[in-house]
Structure formats: C-alpha cells, structure tokens
Amino acid sequence: MDDEEARTRLLDAAEELFYRHGIQAVGMDRIRTASGVPLKRLYRLYPAKESLVAAYLERRDRRWTASLRESVAAASASTRPPVLAVFDWLARWFAEPDFRGCAFLNAYGELGAAAPEVVRVHKAELRALLTEWVPAGSPPSLADQLLVLVEGATAVAALNPGPEPARRAREVAELLLSKSK
Image (cartoon, rainbow, N blue to C red; front, side, top):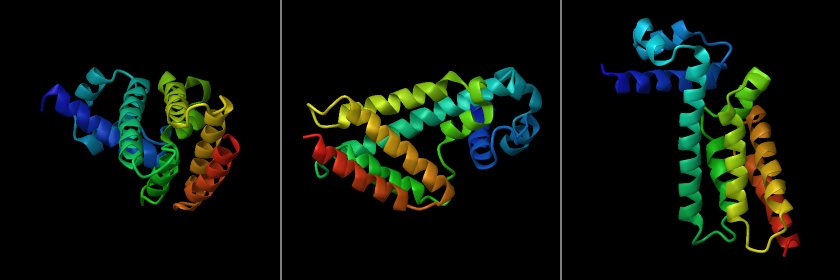
C-alpha cells in the first residue's frame, strides 16, 4: 500500500469513527485497526491526532460543500430562488440513516478553541454560499438569517433525525425571502 492509499484508508476510518463516536472517544489505535494501516505509517502520515482531525474535517468540508453546490446547481432551474434548494438538500441529508449532526459543530463542541481552523472556515464558506444564492438586491442580513436557519435545523435534526427540521426551516426561509423583496 502506498502513502496515498494509506491516507485514504486512514481518512475513511477517521471520518466514520469520529463522526459516529466523537473525536475524543476515538483513539489512534482504533483508527489504525479500522484502516488496516500500520501504526508506524499512521504516525508518519499524521504525527499527531490533531493533524488527522484537521485532515478529516478538511476532506469532509470539500465533499460536503461540493455536494451542496451540485444540488443547488441542479435545482436552480426549477427552484426559485436557488437558496431554497439548500433546505431541500438538508432534508435529504437529515434523513440519511447515519446522520449525526454537523461534523464541524460537533468538533467545536468537543474541542472548543482547540478545534482546527477548518471549522471556522467551513462556516464562513457556508455563509458565502448563502450570500451567493440569495436573490440580487436582498438585504445583507438575509444570508445571516438563513445561516441561523440552516444551523438551527441541523442542530434540531441531530436530536430528532429526519427531514422535518429542514422543511420547517424552508418555510421560514420562504417567509424571510418574501419579506425581503
């Protein structure tokens, strides 16, 4: 196994275990066992758990953001304004059997100020996407209001899995959008 395959296996194992059980609850030996990567190589690629956590969150950010972008782009022809497609995407995500809330907020909840910078970057990227997708001429506060809806729906869905929190958030988003015209 080359280093690229080892990294992929380690990140796959880290994503599965950190997201399901929490960062603090999962040790490097458990990652090693789940990935099948020898401990020596694991520590050569990721000298500390913090570097593996950061790499896991960076990869998750890329995948999550790409999936959201693709979904909004695909729906933009039929969903007006396109920002409402965010809530439809959230409803599908919340209904996934392994949904456990936002990996970035979960990481921040566990690690606090020690959470990797990618946590803050992810939230700033999400706000930027919402700003991009709101109708032209919307008040600057609209993207922030929608961000609160997205984050709130995600937190509620973590406790009560299923699409309903996203549907309710979409209803509120529609009201906000109608008032911002």
